[in-house]
Length: 291
Image (cartoon, rainbow, N blue to C red; front, side, top):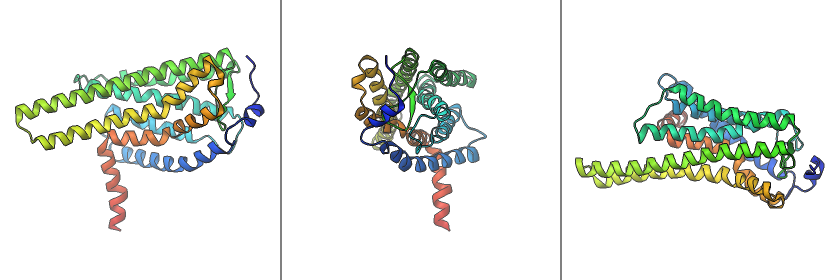
């Protein structure tokens, strides 16, 4: 397999080498501000009695700072930035599955595992991307990606292919856990609410609104997670079998969704933890109105 040089990849970037960096420059600052506001609110008002899901969500938000660390104006391969971005990006994808599992066990099965088990899962979510990174770094499997601006596992070397497979397997497990967990929560909530309505005589309209609200939130989480990361993972997988399928044009239309992971992780975190969103509005919006 002939590995293309960075200059060759650079010349074939579609539509322009500056397109993706400009996209990052537009969306990164709002994502950074939102991450700061979320972390400030959590640490200031929820630190004493936060549950494991909030802790894990905080880690996902913190990973956003590492992803935003990459300097977008540098269009060539920078291994220092790649080391941070590669591990944190894949880790954040995997952690979403752990959070979904915790919610499902607690809500559907009333199982509250000790925090150490979730910390072990969180460590594994970081460990496998780290192994994948070390593998490509030691064996020269890092390549400048054909969408420009970033480096990632290369498909022109055995080490790069192995790391891509590791990423695809771990992210597939995470996506599967996320979808199954939230679908089970939706089904459980609907069944339990209907039972309460029959047994306790709750107001049908009020119950229906609560059910629809919960269903919308969970479906929103599923759609955003799948839509933001799944296209890029599928494109990478197809590129393993036929590199002509993962063209610069395909990369351009899939990579930006991954680039918005920092933003969407914050939004998902607030959707699942409405009390934090309410506190943020109270702190930053109502206080401004009172002034």
